[in-house]
Image (cartoon, rainbow, N blue to C red; front, top):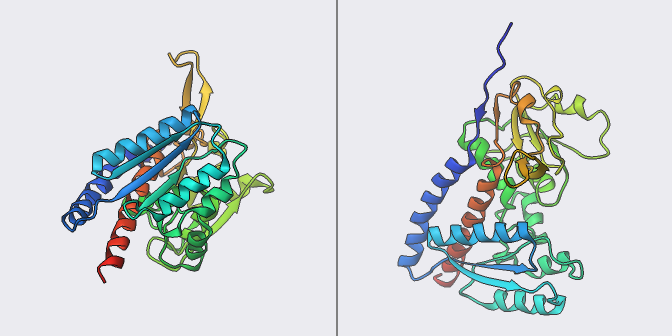
Amino acid sequence: MLKPRKPKLLDGVKLSEVIKSELKNRIEELKEKGCTPCLAVVLVGDNPASQIYVRNKRKTCEELGIRSFAYDLPKETSEADLLKLVDELNSNQEVHGILIQSPLPKHINEEKILNAIDPNKDVDGFHPVNKGKLLNGQDCFVACTPAGIQELLVRYGYKIQGRHVVIVGRSNIVGKPLSALLVQKAEGADATVTICHSRTRNLSNITKTADILVAAMGVPEFIQGRMVRDGCVVIDVGMNRIPDNTKKSGYRLVGDVHFPSVSKRARAITPVPGGVGPMTIAMLMKNTVKSAEKFLASITK
Protein backbone atom coordinates (compact mmCIF):
# COMPACT_ATOMS: atom_id res chain seq x y z
CA MET A 1 0.00 0.00 0.00
CA LEU A 2 1.35 3.43 -0.99
CA LYS A 3 2.07 5.87 1.84
CA PRO A 4 0.24 9.20 1.66
CA ARG A 5 2.47 11.87 0.17
CA LYS A 6 3.93 14.47 2.51
CA PRO A 7 3.35 17.82 0.85
CA LYS A 8 5.75 20.72 0.81
CA LEU A 9 4.53 23.48 3.10
CA LEU A 10 4.50 26.87 1.42
CA ASP A 11 5.66 28.87 4.42
CA GLY A 12 4.43 32.44 4.10
CA VAL A 13 6.15 33.53 7.31
CA LYS A 14 9.63 32.62 6.04
CA LEU A 15 9.04 34.03 2.57
CA SER A 16 7.59 37.27 3.91
CA GLU A 17 10.78 37.77 5.94
CA VAL A 18 12.83 37.46 2.74
CA ILE A 19 10.64 40.02 1.00
CA LYS A 20 10.78 42.41 3.96
CA SER A 21 14.57 42.13 3.97
CA GLU A 22 14.60 43.13 0.30
CA LEU A 23 12.28 46.05 1.07
CA LYS A 24 14.58 47.35 3.81
CA ASN A 25 17.27 48.03 1.20
CA ARG A 26 14.83 49.96 -0.97
CA ILE A 27 13.57 51.91 2.03
CA GLU A 28 17.12 52.90 3.01
CA GLU A 29 17.76 54.14 -0.54
CA LEU A 30 14.60 56.25 -0.37
CA LYS A 31 15.58 57.70 3.00
CA GLU A 32 19.02 58.61 1.68
CA LYS A 33 17.22 60.67 -0.94
CA GLY A 34 15.08 62.39 1.68
CA CYS A 35 11.91 60.35 1.21
CA THR A 36 10.56 58.13 4.01
CA PRO A 37 7.74 55.82 2.88
CA CYS A 38 4.55 56.49 4.83
CA LEU A 39 1.35 54.47 5.21
CA ALA A 40 -1.82 55.97 6.72
CA VAL A 41 -3.97 53.28 8.34
CA VAL A 42 -7.56 54.17 9.15
CA LEU A 43 -9.66 52.06 11.52
CA VAL A 44 -13.29 52.92 12.15
CA GLY A 45 -14.94 51.20 15.10
CA ASP A 46 -13.78 48.46 17.45
CA ASN A 47 -14.07 45.23 15.48
CA PRO A 48 -11.67 42.84 17.29
CA ALA A 49 -10.41 41.14 14.12
CA SER A 50 -9.83 44.51 12.44
CA GLN A 51 -7.90 45.73 15.47
CA ILE A 52 -5.59 42.71 15.22
CA TYR A 53 -5.04 43.20 11.48
CA VAL A 54 -4.31 46.91 11.92
CA ARG A 55 -1.93 46.25 14.80
CA ASN A 56 0.01 43.74 12.68
CA LYS A 57 0.26 46.19 9.78
CA ARG A 58 1.50 49.01 11.99
CA LYS A 59 3.98 46.68 13.68
CA THR A 60 5.39 45.66 10.30
CA CYS A 61 5.71 49.32 9.27
CA GLU A 62 7.73 50.01 12.41
CA GLU A 63 9.90 46.94 11.81
CA LEU A 64 10.78 48.09 8.28
CA GLY A 65 11.23 51.78 9.00
CA ILE A 66 8.04 52.84 7.20
CA ARG A 67 6.23 55.75 8.86
CA SER A 68 2.73 54.86 9.97
CA PHE A 69 0.01 57.44 10.56
CA ALA A 70 -2.68 55.95 12.79
CA TYR A 71 -6.29 57.08 12.64
CA ASP A 72 -8.49 55.16 15.09
CA LEU A 73 -11.97 56.60 14.73
CA PRO A 74 -15.12 55.83 16.73
CA LYS A 75 -17.77 53.67 15.09
CA GLU A 76 -20.13 56.68 15.08
CA THR A 77 -17.86 58.50 12.62
CA SER A 78 -19.97 59.85 9.77
CA GLU A 79 -19.39 59.04 6.12
CA ALA A 80 -18.81 62.74 5.44
CA ASP A 81 -16.11 62.98 8.12
CA LEU A 82 -14.37 59.86 6.78
CA LEU A 83 -14.46 61.25 3.24
CA LYS A 84 -12.96 64.50 4.56
CA LEU A 85 -10.10 62.55 6.16
CA VAL A 86 -9.47 60.62 2.93
CA ASP A 87 -9.35 63.93 1.04
CA GLU A 88 -6.80 65.30 3.52
CA LEU A 89 -4.63 62.20 3.19
CA ASN A 90 -4.86 62.39 -0.61
CA SER A 91 -3.44 65.93 -0.42
CA ASN A 92 -0.73 65.14 2.13
CA GLN A 93 2.53 64.64 0.22
CA GLU A 94 4.10 62.91 3.21
CA VAL A 95 1.59 60.05 2.82
CA HIS A 96 2.32 57.50 0.08
CA GLY A 97 -0.28 54.87 0.92
CA ILE A 98 -3.79 54.96 2.35
CA LEU A 99 -5.43 51.90 3.89
CA ILE A 100 -9.04 51.90 5.08
CA GLN A 101 -9.53 48.80 7.21
CA SER A 102 -12.56 46.74 6.22
CA PRO A 103 -15.30 46.19 7.23
CA LEU A 104 -16.63 49.67 7.85
CA PRO A 105 -19.71 50.35 10.01
CA LYS A 106 -22.98 49.71 8.16
CA HIS A 107 -23.92 53.38 7.90
CA ILE A 108 -20.82 54.07 5.75
CA ASN A 109 -20.76 53.19 2.04
CA GLU A 110 -17.48 51.29 1.77
CA GLU A 111 -17.35 51.46 -2.03
CA LYS A 112 -17.75 55.24 -1.92
CA ILE A 113 -14.88 55.56 0.55
CA LEU A 114 -12.52 53.29 -1.40
CA ASN A 115 -13.31 55.10 -4.65
CA ALA A 116 -12.39 58.40 -2.99
CA ILE A 117 -8.79 57.31 -2.40
CA ASP A 118 -6.23 58.69 -4.84
CA PRO A 119 -5.38 55.72 -7.13
CA ASN A 120 -1.70 56.64 -6.73
CA LYS A 121 -2.03 56.00 -2.98
CA ASP A 122 -4.35 52.99 -3.25
CA VAL A 123 -1.84 50.48 -1.89
CA ASP A 124 -4.65 47.97 -1.22
CA GLY A 125 -5.33 47.84 -4.97
CA PHE A 126 -9.10 48.24 -4.56
CA HIS A 127 -9.71 51.43 -6.59
CA PRO A 128 -11.48 50.92 -9.96
CA VAL A 129 -8.53 52.56 -11.73
CA ASN A 130 -6.10 49.98 -10.37
CA LYS A 131 -8.54 47.14 -10.99
CA GLY A 132 -8.95 48.26 -14.59
CA LYS A 133 -5.22 48.58 -15.13
CA LEU A 134 -4.71 45.10 -13.71
CA LEU A 135 -7.24 43.70 -16.16
CA ASN A 136 -5.48 45.51 -19.02
CA GLY A 137 -2.05 44.26 -17.95
CA GLN A 138 -0.79 47.75 -17.07
CA ASP A 139 1.47 48.73 -14.19
CA CYS A 140 -0.67 49.29 -11.09
CA PHE A 141 -1.12 48.45 -7.44
CA VAL A 142 -2.26 44.84 -7.31
CA ALA A 143 -4.53 43.75 -4.44
CA CYS A 144 -2.25 42.40 -1.72
CA THR A 145 -3.59 38.87 -1.24
CA PRO A 146 -3.52 37.96 -4.97
CA ALA A 147 -0.03 39.48 -5.25
CA GLY A 148 1.06 37.44 -2.23
CA ILE A 149 -0.32 34.23 -3.74
CA GLN A 150 1.57 34.85 -6.97
CA GLU A 151 4.79 35.50 -5.03
CA LEU A 152 4.35 32.26 -3.06
CA LEU A 153 3.97 30.21 -6.22
CA VAL A 154 6.80 31.89 -8.13
CA ARG A 155 9.36 32.00 -5.32
CA TYR A 156 8.73 28.40 -4.31
CA GLY A 157 9.33 27.40 -7.93
CA TYR A 158 5.86 26.27 -9.01
CA LYS A 159 5.28 27.01 -12.65
CA ILE A 160 2.11 28.96 -13.43
CA GLN A 161 2.49 29.27 -17.20
CA GLY A 162 0.15 26.88 -19.00
CA ARG A 163 -1.21 25.45 -15.76
CA HIS A 164 -4.89 25.20 -14.93
CA VAL A 165 -5.64 27.39 -11.92
CA VAL A 166 -9.02 26.86 -10.27
CA ILE A 167 -10.12 29.61 -7.90
CA VAL A 168 -13.03 28.79 -5.60
CA GLY A 169 -14.43 32.18 -4.63
CA ARG A 170 -15.25 35.31 -6.65
CA SER A 171 -14.72 38.16 -4.19
CA ASN A 172 -13.47 41.56 -5.29
CA ILE A 173 -10.57 41.17 -2.85
CA VAL A 174 -9.20 37.77 -3.91
CA GLY A 175 -11.01 35.74 -6.56
CA LYS A 176 -11.58 38.32 -9.29
CA PRO A 177 -8.23 40.16 -9.06
CA LEU A 178 -6.30 36.89 -8.76
CA SER A 179 -7.90 35.58 -11.94
CA ALA A 180 -7.00 38.83 -13.73
CA LEU A 181 -3.42 38.63 -12.44
CA LEU A 182 -2.71 35.02 -13.36
CA VAL A 183 -4.32 35.13 -16.81
CA GLN A 184 -2.01 37.94 -18.02
CA LYS A 185 0.55 37.36 -20.74
CA ALA A 186 3.43 37.96 -18.35
CA GLU A 187 6.05 36.39 -16.11
CA GLY A 188 4.50 34.50 -13.23
CA ALA A 189 1.20 34.25 -15.11
CA ASP A 190 -0.04 32.84 -18.47
CA ALA A 191 -2.35 30.42 -16.67
CA THR A 192 -5.68 29.01 -17.78
CA VAL A 193 -8.01 30.23 -15.04
CA THR A 194 -11.39 28.92 -13.93
CA ILE A 195 -13.43 30.72 -11.27
CA CYS A 196 -15.95 28.70 -9.27
CA HIS A 197 -18.51 29.98 -6.78
CA SER A 198 -21.65 29.10 -4.83
CA ARG A 199 -23.68 28.55 -8.00
CA THR A 200 -21.12 26.38 -9.78
CA ARG A 201 -22.48 22.95 -10.72
CA ASN A 202 -20.47 19.77 -10.16
CA LEU A 203 -17.80 21.71 -8.28
CA SER A 204 -15.70 18.65 -7.43
CA ASN A 205 -15.44 17.71 -11.11
CA ILE A 206 -13.82 21.09 -11.74
CA THR A 207 -11.56 21.30 -8.69
CA LYS A 208 -10.15 17.86 -9.53
CA THR A 209 -8.84 19.24 -12.84
CA ALA A 210 -6.74 21.93 -11.12
CA ASP A 211 -2.96 21.98 -11.25
CA ILE A 212 -3.19 24.85 -8.76
CA LEU A 213 -6.25 25.15 -6.52
CA VAL A 214 -7.00 28.37 -4.63
CA ALA A 215 -9.63 28.18 -1.88
CA ALA A 216 -11.03 31.62 -1.07
CA MET A 217 -14.71 31.29 -0.23
CA GLY A 218 -14.67 31.83 3.54
CA VAL A 219 -16.22 28.48 4.47
CA PRO A 220 -14.30 26.47 7.08
CA GLU A 221 -12.65 23.31 5.70
CA PHE A 222 -14.90 23.27 2.64
CA ILE A 223 -12.34 21.76 0.26
CA GLN A 224 -11.99 18.05 1.09
CA GLY A 225 -9.41 15.54 -0.06
CA ARG A 226 -11.86 13.89 -2.48
CA MET A 227 -12.11 17.22 -4.34
CA VAL A 228 -8.38 17.43 -5.14
CA ARG A 229 -6.31 15.47 -7.60
CA ASP A 230 -2.97 13.93 -6.65
CA GLY A 231 -0.07 16.33 -7.10
CA CYS A 232 -2.11 19.52 -6.96
CA VAL A 233 -0.65 22.71 -5.44
CA VAL A 234 -3.17 24.08 -2.92
CA ILE A 235 -3.38 27.69 -1.74
CA ASP A 236 -5.67 28.19 1.25
CA VAL A 237 -6.75 31.83 1.65
CA GLY A 238 -9.31 31.14 4.39
CA MET A 239 -8.97 32.14 8.02
CA ASN A 240 -11.88 30.88 10.11
CA ARG A 241 -12.48 30.42 13.83
CA ILE A 242 -14.21 27.19 14.82
CA PRO A 243 -15.12 26.05 18.36
CA ASP A 244 -12.53 23.86 20.08
CA ASN A 245 -12.94 23.08 23.78
CA THR A 246 -9.37 21.76 23.99
CA LYS A 247 -8.03 25.27 23.38
CA LYS A 248 -7.74 27.89 26.10
CA SER A 249 -9.32 30.42 23.74
CA GLY A 250 -12.23 28.08 23.05
CA TYR A 251 -11.55 28.07 19.32
CA ARG A 252 -8.94 27.21 16.72
CA LEU A 253 -8.07 28.68 13.35
CA VAL A 254 -8.70 26.69 10.19
CA GLY A 255 -8.66 27.56 6.51
CA ASP A 256 -11.13 26.86 3.72
CA VAL A 257 -9.26 23.60 3.10
CA HIS A 258 -9.58 20.45 5.21
CA PHE A 259 -5.85 20.14 5.77
CA PRO A 260 -5.72 16.52 7.07
CA SER A 261 -7.38 15.03 3.97
CA VAL A 262 -6.12 17.45 1.29
CA SER A 263 -2.50 17.34 2.46
CA LYS A 264 -2.43 13.59 1.73
CA ARG A 265 -2.95 14.33 -1.97
CA ALA A 266 -1.36 17.74 -2.49
CA ARG A 267 2.12 18.28 -3.84
CA ALA A 268 2.34 21.52 -1.88
CA ILE A 269 -0.02 23.41 0.41
CA THR A 270 -0.14 26.61 2.47
CA PRO A 271 -0.66 26.23 6.22
CA VAL A 272 -3.29 28.19 8.18
CA PRO A 273 -2.14 30.29 9.89
CA GLY A 274 1.26 31.13 8.44
CA GLY A 275 0.60 30.81 4.72
CA VAL A 276 -1.15 33.53 2.75
CA GLY A 277 -1.72 35.93 5.66
CA PRO A 278 1.90 37.05 6.20
CA MET A 279 2.31 37.44 2.44
CA THR A 280 -0.66 39.81 2.26
CA ILE A 281 0.98 42.16 4.76
CA ALA A 282 4.35 41.89 2.97
CA MET A 283 2.68 42.91 -0.31
CA LEU A 284 1.04 45.88 1.40
CA MET A 285 4.49 47.05 2.48
CA LYS A 286 5.83 46.42 -1.02
CA ASN A 287 3.06 48.52 -2.56
CA THR A 288 3.76 51.33 -0.07
CA VAL A 289 7.44 51.36 -0.98
CA LYS A 290 6.55 51.29 -4.67
CA SER A 291 4.26 54.28 -4.17
CA ALA A 292 7.03 56.23 -2.41
CA GLU A 293 9.45 55.42 -5.23
CA LYS A 294 6.93 56.60 -7.83
CA PHE A 295 6.31 59.81 -5.87
CA LEU A 296 10.04 60.54 -5.58
CA ALA A 297 10.50 59.92 -9.30
CA SER A 298 7.64 62.31 -10.11
CA ILE A 299 9.16 65.23 -8.17
CA THR A 300 12.75 64.73 -9.34
CA LYS A 301 12.12 64.62 -13.08
